[in-house]
Image 1 (tube, helix red, strand yellow):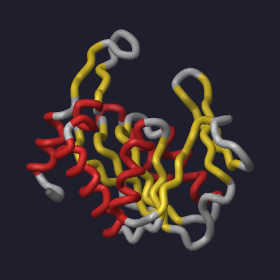
Image 2 (cartoon, one colour; image 1 turned 90 degrees about the vertical axis):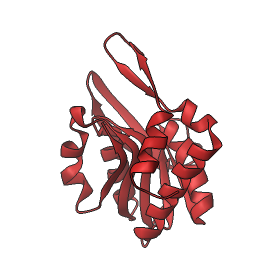
Image 3 (cartoon, one colour; image 1 turned 180 degrees about the vertical axis):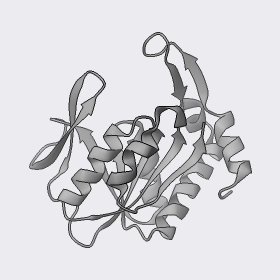
Length: 182
C-alpha cells in the first residue's frame, strides 16, 4: 500500500490518543498500536522507503527515540544506511552535537562524527512533528557533517503547534512530508 487516503486512514486508525500524558492538558499520540500491527507498520515502512527513493536518499537519520523505531526498518527496506541521532552523552566515541531551545531550557542531540559526510543525501525520519526543535537541530547536525538534507519525513504533523513554519528556513528547500496532518 503506498500513499493516499487509504494509507492515512489505516495509519490514523492505529494511533491512540492518550489524554493528559505526560502532563495535564497534553493529548499524547501513541504509535505503539500501529507498531503492533504488522500490516500498518509494513505500510508505513513502505511509504517512507518510497520517499527515500523519490528523494534519492542514501542514508536515513532516525531521531531519538521513536524515530529509531521507524527509520531502522526503512533503511533496511530501502537498502540504505541508518544513522541514529541521540540525546547528548548516549553515543560512544567522537560526536558532533547541536543544542536547541525547549519551552523551558535547552537540550542537545548528537551523531557520530564520522556517520555522515560530503556526498551523503539524508532523509530525516521521525514519528511526530510538533514544534520542530529536534528536527531543526538534526538538520543543522547533518549539514555540519557535510551531508545534504534530502528531506524530512514524519508520520504525524501536529499543525496547531506550527512546527512546519518554524522549520521552513532550516529546510532550505528540502521537502517536509507528513503522512498525516492533524
